Length: 147
Image 1 (cartoon, rainbow, N blue to C red):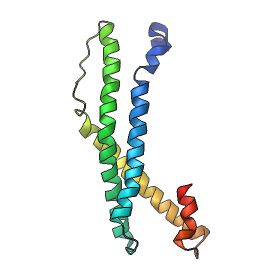
Image 2 (image 1 turned 180 degrees about the vertical axis):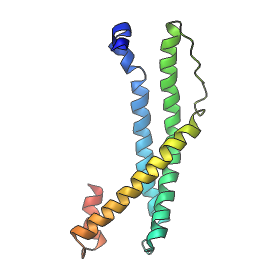
Image 3 (image 1 turned 120 degrees about the horizontal axis):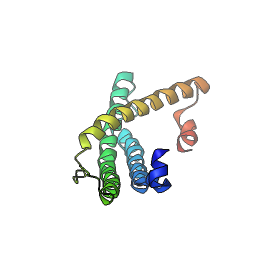
Image 4 (image 1 turned 90 degrees about the vertical axis):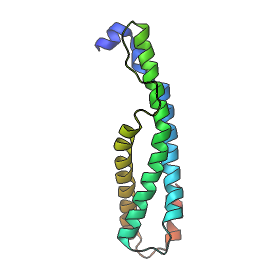
């Protein structure tokens, strides 16, 4: 409330474009590459649950590493946009111009989250498929996966 009173509503939108673009690209890479890596790493003949879960986790981690690397550049642009606004007002900005300076922190935050969320998704869909239609062949669910 104080920020809006002193700097106006536009202060709340600083860096919004960079954030939205960054997370859009990161999400597209994360989910797209996850499906590609999963298809390449997990053969349909593998039925051992621990092996499948491990390969799903590796696929998710690899996809997130690529997505997070792309995200870092947009996060750096957002920080520069906010810092340049602060600098224009005469405030000191200790921003780092290196787009990859926060890469370790982003990996530490994003990779475990992505692995957990995608493994949960895989487990829940498997349980639902087997509960709702235990005798249906896997091809029967192709419409559900695409939709």
